[in-house]
Length: 111
Image 1: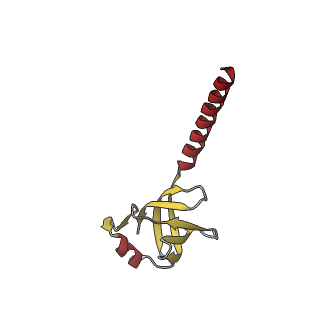
Image 2: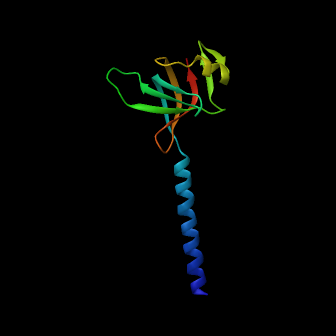
């Protein structure tokens, strides 16, 4: 009886640890930054961008999905229209969060 109690206790502790790790992976660090488009990758639904600061050469990926909202001059833009508007060297504002691999998952893009 004592062995069964120890096994069940160990199982429950392991279950709580695994649940906490999965929840931590789902959290996003929020971002709101002005970036310059380096490359438009419509096939992969992402943009290669660089933070719009003098001398910054780090390129990041902004992933876009069906839930991403777009706005141009405070007017909503559709998903397909946004892809037609995006071009190299365009300055945009991206609001969203970082994923576990440090890419940006866009929630809102302002053009």
